[in-house]
Image (tube, rainbow, N blue to C red):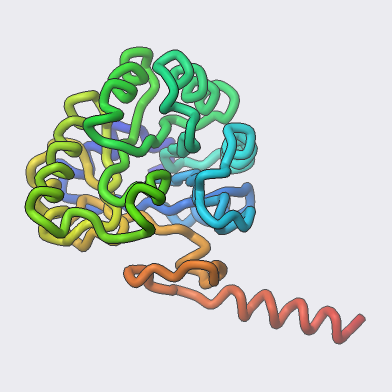
Amino acid sequence: MSRKKTILDIQKMKVDGEKIAMLTCYDYPTARIMDACGVDVILIGDSAGVVVAGYENTLPVTMDEMLYHTRAVMRANPKALVAADMPFMSYQIDIADARRNAGRMLKEGGAAAVKIEGGVNIAPVIAALVEIDIPVVAHIGLTPQSIHRMGGYKVQGKKGEQAERILEDAVAVQNAGAFAVVLEGIPQGLAARITETLTIPTIGIGAGAGCDGQVLVIHDILGLCEKYSPKFVKRYADAAALISGAVTSYISEV
Protein backbone atom coordinates (compact mmCIF):
# COMPACT_ATOMS: atom_id res chain seq x y z
CA MET A 1 0.00 0.00 0.00
CA SER A 2 1.56 3.28 -1.15
CA ARG A 3 -0.64 5.51 1.00
CA LYS A 4 -0.86 5.70 4.78
CA LYS A 5 -2.95 3.02 6.44
CA THR A 6 -6.06 4.28 8.20
CA ILE A 7 -8.34 2.95 10.91
CA LEU A 8 -10.82 1.97 8.20
CA ASP A 9 -8.10 -0.10 6.50
CA ILE A 10 -7.37 -1.95 9.74
CA GLN A 11 -11.05 -2.62 10.39
CA LYS A 12 -11.52 -3.88 6.82
CA MET A 13 -8.72 -6.38 7.38
CA LYS A 14 -10.92 -8.14 9.97
CA VAL A 15 -13.85 -8.23 7.54
CA ASP A 16 -11.61 -9.63 4.80
CA GLY A 17 -9.99 -12.18 7.12
CA GLU A 18 -6.56 -10.62 6.63
CA LYS A 19 -4.29 -10.86 9.68
CA ILE A 20 -3.01 -7.60 11.23
CA ALA A 21 0.71 -7.33 12.07
CA MET A 22 1.50 -4.87 14.86
CA LEU A 23 4.88 -4.25 16.50
CA THR A 24 6.13 -1.79 19.10
CA CYS A 25 8.61 0.89 18.08
CA TYR A 26 10.26 3.74 19.97
CA ASP A 27 12.72 5.47 17.61
CA TYR A 28 13.29 6.89 14.13
CA PRO A 29 15.68 4.32 12.58
CA THR A 30 13.65 1.32 13.75
CA ALA A 31 10.46 2.94 12.48
CA ARG A 32 12.01 3.40 9.03
CA ILE A 33 13.12 -0.24 8.83
CA MET A 34 9.88 -1.63 10.24
CA ASP A 35 7.69 0.45 7.96
CA ALA A 36 9.67 -0.54 4.86
CA CYS A 37 8.88 -4.18 5.76
CA GLY A 38 5.15 -3.42 5.57
CA VAL A 39 4.01 -3.71 9.19
CA ASP A 40 0.33 -2.72 9.49
CA VAL A 41 0.34 -0.94 12.85
CA ILE A 42 3.19 0.62 14.82
CA LEU A 43 2.54 0.82 18.55
CA ILE A 44 4.61 3.28 20.55
CA GLY A 45 4.27 1.28 23.72
CA ASP A 46 4.86 2.37 27.28
CA SER A 47 6.93 -0.84 27.25
CA ALA A 48 9.66 1.64 26.27
CA GLY A 49 9.99 2.19 30.01
CA VAL A 50 11.18 -1.39 30.45
CA VAL A 51 13.06 -2.19 27.22
CA VAL A 52 14.57 1.25 26.53
CA ALA A 53 14.74 3.09 29.86
CA GLY A 54 15.36 0.05 32.08
CA TYR A 55 12.46 0.55 34.54
CA GLU A 56 11.16 -2.51 36.37
CA ASN A 57 7.68 -2.02 34.87
CA THR A 58 5.67 0.51 32.85
CA LEU A 59 4.33 2.52 35.81
CA PRO A 60 7.07 5.21 35.95
CA VAL A 61 6.65 6.20 32.28
CA THR A 62 5.59 9.84 31.84
CA MET A 63 3.66 11.77 29.18
CA ASP A 64 6.83 13.63 28.22
CA GLU A 65 8.67 10.35 27.65
CA MET A 66 5.83 8.98 25.53
CA LEU A 67 5.66 12.18 23.49
CA TYR A 68 9.43 12.01 22.92
CA HIS A 69 9.21 8.47 21.53
CA THR A 70 6.09 9.28 19.49
CA ARG A 71 7.71 12.28 17.81
CA ALA A 72 10.83 10.21 17.06
CA VAL A 73 8.79 7.49 15.36
CA MET A 74 6.66 9.97 13.41
CA ARG A 75 9.75 11.64 11.93
CA ALA A 76 10.14 8.44 9.86
CA ASN A 77 6.80 9.34 8.23
CA PRO A 78 5.54 5.76 8.45
CA LYS A 79 2.77 4.48 6.18
CA ALA A 80 1.66 2.15 8.98
CA LEU A 81 -1.10 3.28 11.30
CA VAL A 82 0.56 4.66 14.45
CA ALA A 83 -0.97 4.31 17.91
CA ALA A 84 0.65 5.55 21.13
CA ASP A 85 0.18 4.23 24.64
CA MET A 86 -1.30 6.50 27.28
CA PRO A 87 0.99 6.11 30.32
CA PHE A 88 -0.17 5.31 33.84
CA MET A 89 -2.15 8.13 35.49
CA SER A 90 -2.48 10.13 32.27
CA TYR A 91 -6.14 9.14 31.77
CA GLN A 92 -7.39 7.62 35.04
CA ILE A 93 -7.87 10.79 37.11
CA ASP A 94 -10.74 12.47 35.26
CA ILE A 95 -12.22 12.88 31.78
CA ALA A 96 -10.76 16.36 31.23
CA ASP A 97 -7.27 15.08 32.05
CA ALA A 98 -7.71 12.09 29.74
CA ARG A 99 -8.88 14.29 26.87
CA ARG A 100 -6.07 16.79 27.35
CA ASN A 101 -3.33 14.15 27.47
CA ALA A 102 -4.72 12.02 24.64
CA GLY A 103 -5.07 15.17 22.55
CA ARG A 104 -1.37 15.89 23.09
CA MET A 105 -0.49 12.47 21.66
CA LEU A 106 -2.20 13.43 18.39
CA LYS A 107 -1.44 17.17 18.34
CA GLU A 108 2.16 17.19 19.62
CA GLY A 109 3.19 13.59 19.00
CA GLY A 110 1.55 13.07 15.63
CA ALA A 111 0.02 9.68 16.39
CA ALA A 112 -3.24 8.65 14.72
CA ALA A 113 -4.65 6.94 17.81
CA VAL A 114 -4.03 6.23 21.48
CA LYS A 115 -4.14 2.96 23.41
CA ILE A 116 -5.51 2.77 26.93
CA GLU A 117 -5.78 -0.12 29.37
CA GLY A 118 -9.00 -1.24 31.04
CA GLY A 119 -12.46 -2.60 30.31
CA VAL A 120 -15.84 -1.79 31.83
CA ASN A 121 -14.16 0.55 34.33
CA ILE A 122 -12.49 2.64 31.62
CA ALA A 123 -15.26 2.52 28.98
CA PRO A 124 -16.52 6.04 29.90
CA VAL A 125 -13.02 7.41 29.19
CA ILE A 126 -12.94 5.68 25.80
CA ALA A 127 -16.35 7.13 24.96
CA ALA A 128 -15.23 10.62 26.01
CA LEU A 129 -12.15 10.45 23.78
CA VAL A 130 -14.03 9.05 20.78
CA GLU A 131 -16.63 11.82 21.24
CA ILE A 132 -13.94 14.42 20.43
CA ASP A 133 -12.50 12.38 17.53
CA ILE A 134 -9.55 10.80 19.31
CA PRO A 135 -9.40 7.18 18.03
CA VAL A 136 -8.81 4.57 20.73
CA VAL A 137 -7.31 1.08 20.80
CA ALA A 138 -8.50 -0.64 23.96
CA HIS A 139 -6.39 -3.12 25.96
CA ILE A 140 -7.91 -5.81 28.19
CA GLY A 141 -6.92 -9.06 29.89
CA LEU A 142 -3.45 -8.80 31.38
CA THR A 143 -3.00 -5.06 31.67
CA PRO A 144 0.61 -4.19 32.69
CA GLN A 145 -0.40 -0.96 34.42
CA SER A 146 -2.44 -3.14 36.83
CA ILE A 147 0.55 -5.34 37.69
CA HIS A 148 0.24 -4.79 41.46
CA ARG A 149 -3.45 -5.72 41.59
CA MET A 150 -2.84 -8.78 39.41
CA GLY A 151 0.15 -9.92 41.45
CA GLY A 152 2.52 -9.94 38.49
CA TYR A 153 2.38 -10.84 34.81
CA LYS A 154 -0.09 -13.71 35.15
CA VAL A 155 -2.52 -15.15 32.60
CA GLN A 156 -6.00 -13.73 33.14
CA GLY A 157 -9.38 -15.38 32.50
CA LYS A 158 -8.50 -18.98 33.32
CA LYS A 159 -11.58 -19.40 35.54
CA GLY A 160 -15.15 -19.11 34.27
CA GLU A 161 -16.16 -16.05 36.26
CA GLN A 162 -12.98 -14.16 35.36
CA ALA A 163 -13.37 -15.17 31.70
CA GLU A 164 -16.91 -13.78 31.63
CA ARG A 165 -15.67 -10.50 33.11
CA ILE A 166 -13.06 -10.19 30.35
CA LEU A 167 -15.74 -10.87 27.72
CA GLU A 168 -17.84 -8.13 29.33
CA ASP A 169 -14.81 -5.83 29.15
CA ALA A 170 -14.44 -6.59 25.44
CA VAL A 171 -18.05 -5.76 24.67
CA ALA A 172 -17.89 -2.62 26.84
CA VAL A 173 -14.85 -1.15 25.05
CA GLN A 174 -16.39 -1.91 21.66
CA ASN A 175 -19.66 -0.25 22.68
CA ALA A 176 -17.69 2.74 23.98
CA GLY A 177 -16.23 3.27 20.51
CA ALA A 178 -12.78 1.64 20.51
CA PHE A 179 -11.84 0.72 16.93
CA ALA A 180 -9.68 -2.25 17.99
CA VAL A 181 -8.74 -4.07 21.16
CA VAL A 182 -5.52 -5.69 22.38
CA LEU A 183 -6.07 -9.00 24.18
CA GLU A 184 -3.09 -9.76 26.40
CA GLY A 185 -2.29 -12.87 28.42
CA ILE A 186 -5.60 -14.70 28.16
CA PRO A 187 -6.40 -18.33 27.20
CA GLN A 188 -6.56 -19.07 23.48
CA GLY A 189 -10.17 -20.26 23.65
CA LEU A 190 -11.34 -17.08 25.37
CA ALA A 191 -9.48 -14.89 22.86
CA ALA A 192 -11.08 -16.77 19.95
CA ARG A 193 -14.52 -16.38 21.56
CA ILE A 194 -14.01 -12.64 22.00
CA THR A 195 -12.77 -12.33 18.40
CA GLU A 196 -15.92 -14.04 17.12
CA THR A 197 -18.16 -11.92 19.34
CA LEU A 198 -16.74 -8.50 18.43
CA THR A 199 -17.06 -6.60 15.16
CA ILE A 200 -13.83 -4.66 15.86
CA PRO A 201 -10.39 -6.27 15.30
CA THR A 202 -8.67 -8.10 18.15
CA ILE A 203 -4.88 -7.93 18.42
CA GLY A 204 -3.40 -10.71 20.54
CA ILE A 205 -0.26 -10.84 22.64
CA GLY A 206 0.06 -14.15 24.42
CA ALA A 207 -3.57 -14.87 23.50
CA GLY A 208 -3.21 -17.52 20.80
CA ALA A 209 -3.69 -17.61 17.05
CA GLY A 210 -7.44 -17.02 17.05
CA CYS A 211 -7.16 -13.22 17.14
CA ASP A 212 -7.47 -10.93 14.10
CA GLY A 213 -3.83 -9.87 14.51
CA GLN A 214 -0.78 -10.09 16.73
CA VAL A 215 1.49 -7.62 18.53
CA LEU A 216 4.89 -8.16 20.14
CA VAL A 217 7.58 -5.95 21.63
CA ILE A 218 10.32 -5.39 19.03
CA HIS A 219 13.12 -5.78 21.60
CA ASP A 220 11.72 -9.20 22.57
CA ILE A 221 11.70 -10.62 19.04
CA LEU A 222 15.22 -9.25 18.44
CA GLY A 223 16.64 -10.71 21.65
CA LEU A 224 17.49 -7.31 23.11
CA CYS A 225 15.61 -7.51 26.40
CA GLU A 226 16.93 -9.99 28.95
CA LYS A 227 14.91 -8.56 31.85
CA TYR A 228 11.72 -10.42 30.92
CA SER A 229 11.25 -13.31 28.53
CA PRO A 230 7.54 -14.11 28.09
CA LYS A 231 6.85 -17.76 27.20
CA PHE A 232 4.80 -16.78 24.14
CA VAL A 233 7.56 -14.72 22.50
CA LYS A 234 9.38 -16.21 19.52
CA ARG A 235 12.88 -14.75 19.14
CA TYR A 236 13.38 -14.07 15.43
CA ALA A 237 16.96 -12.78 15.72
CA ASP A 238 19.82 -12.47 18.20
CA ALA A 239 20.60 -8.79 17.75
CA ALA A 240 22.40 -8.71 21.11
CA ALA A 241 25.08 -11.06 19.74
CA LEU A 242 25.36 -8.97 16.57
CA ILE A 243 25.86 -5.74 18.51
CA SER A 244 28.26 -7.42 20.93
CA GLY A 245 30.35 -8.73 18.02
CA ALA A 246 30.51 -5.31 16.38
CA VAL A 247 31.47 -3.53 19.62
CA THR A 248 34.10 -6.15 20.46
CA SER A 249 35.62 -5.81 16.97
CA TYR A 250 35.65 -2.02 17.28
CA ILE A 251 37.38 -2.15 20.69
CA SER A 252 39.92 -4.61 19.35
CA GLU A 253 40.74 -2.41 16.35
CA VAL A 254 41.04 0.70 18.52
